[in-house]
Amino acid sequence: MSTATATMKGVFFSSKIDGLCEIRDLPIPTPGNDEVLIRNTAVASNPKDWKVPLWMPDWEGVEGNDVAGIVESVGKDVQEFKKGDKVAAFSKMRTDTKYGAYAEYTVAPAHTTWHLARSTAFEEASTLPLAMMTAAIGLFVRLQLSVPPESGDPAPPNGKVIIINGASSSVGAFAIQLAKKAGYAVVGIAGQSAEYATSLGADRVVDYRGKDNAALGSAVREAVTALTGNSTTGPVAVYDAVSTESTVEMLAYEVLDHYPSQHQGRKITTVLPAHDKGEGLHSKTGVQVERTMVGTAHSEDSEFAKKWYRIVGKWLDQGKFKANQVKLMPNGLDSVKEGVHLLKDNKVNAVKLVYRISDTRSLSQN
Image (cartoon, rainbow, N blue to C red; front, side, top):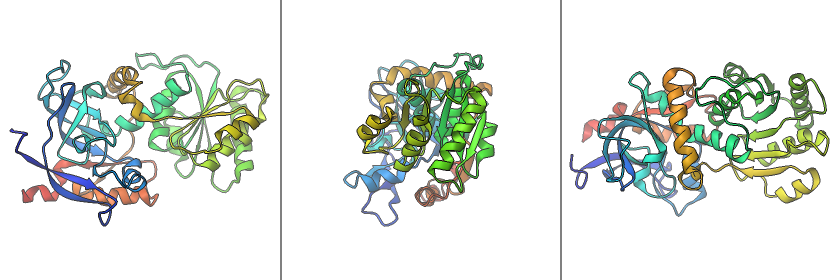
């Protein structure tokens, strides 16, 4: 294949496009020195895929960053991969169309690419890249929790509790599994998918529905006490995968601020810029709010990401780690517009939207 002249189908995003995105013919990209070109088999959606073109209207290009497929070519400095390898990868965000997942081919850095076993489904593997690493960086870099054994066998329970809000979300589902493997007890907060969070290992799940912040905070504290056996022993940290101003304030004021001032678990990590009054909140409660940005997997946390993609990838192959529940969209890339609008309208719950490239009807028009 000559990538210099060949074209591919890709879903181009722009705030100027009616419906936010459209299928276009685009050049097949070429990988850089330390990159791989992947012929995609399955790609997955994340909520940020619709947010970026709306929140950053000057940016446009192919969106998406979760891919699984076959290596087509590699850059001159890549030693770990070769043409024909079965892989999954997390591509760079908001940089260049060549990194977009919603296309027949995607370029990804070698360090955020990992091998897949022959038996591992592309569709399941595509659910991991962005959300799993968001969970891992949040837990083990931002919150500085102890990491799990590399074997994938759970560490002995350490008697410590972590709260995970949004426990049935993609990030929350992976955070539960990683925290449990590291030996922590988990109090999850979820709605109609509470049973899903429990199935992933959450020790207690609090249903937020029908509760104001005070009632929800009280229910969360009761769940923590049930696990610690002591009403004055709070969680060691909080992962807020929902990350609204209201959820951060509930967790800070109605949960963490109820424990003694010397309690050390006064840190919340979020996945969105959820609280613009962080200094005021900290001065009142001593709670520190720090955002987890998965893009650091391509910068300061690159070595962490390289190591843990390979470790968790092996767990997935061995059946020791669960992918997100897959909702396969029916028409491949032709369904991406529908999928991102389902996410935008908050109509996706406890599943990951996945697109199989071979199901793309418009490919037969080439």
